[in-house]
Length: 350
Image 1 (cartoon, rainbow, N blue to C red):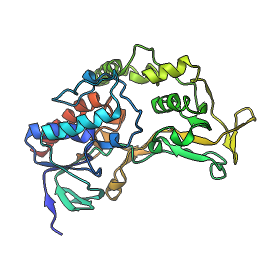
Image 2: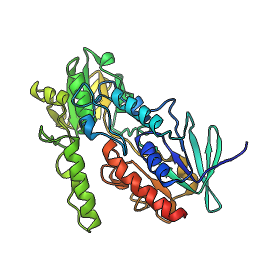
Image 3: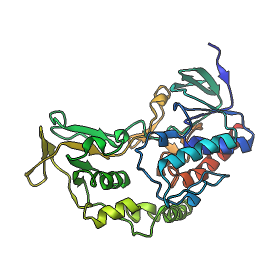
Image 4: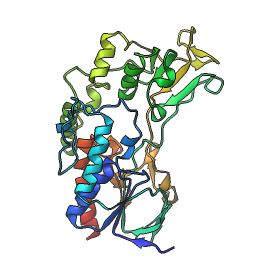
């Protein structure tokens, strides 16, 4: 099969990949976006139906074009999917899908990108694959013997299968709080966290978080660290979470020690019967396709020099979280790091 050629291959066609495409288009660099989804929208296509943004539409945008107003203060995921699809069409971004990247290998001074639709040759790669396809499951004694249902955030599609049951929700972040808020209206819930959840003030949403992340980015550039968003708290009080709090449903308990066949052993040695566990325990970067490169590692992750792998200035990472730029995993934040990434590649490749 013939190998297609381009200057830059963007792996991933979600919000980070589209933001990269916007700036690559402006820079005049030839590029192609490879996406494994069947249609536009990135991982937002797979999120649970009741998920909402943490910011109003006016403050949830990719570079160049605002998100259209939503009928709700905090737009639902379906609104985001529509926006990303329209954004892709507006800027005529060259996205090939569904195409899964199986491996990236060095090819002279560039890279060969092997995919389910053939191979590509490129001078540079922007990795924008996100984390959704790599849910993290912790290990606890008794997980294999528990006879109830266990699902991860990535598999949660609504409360229907647990209605009327006793459900343990595990995790202290936004996903856990939103899912608990929804399930608690249909089932008896227990909330377990490894440390007490930290709730943001009711008037703090994604707009404030982005401003804090921006100030941190400036502080880091000046050799200081303000702590950023992490210093404020973990859980944004969107309407459903505020309602759950007011109903008394947000009572977190210390993480259980083990599972039994039909329940959990609590930290004090007691036993709670449960029918299901929802593990809201986060994700890891989806980077298996880079294993053939044997990139240098640090602290269990890829060693970085700014936005690119250490020693590999044309292997760029975008949109995975703070390690690829403050707020880079958010709609409004990814544009800033996408611009920096493309500016870096423009100067490196010319």
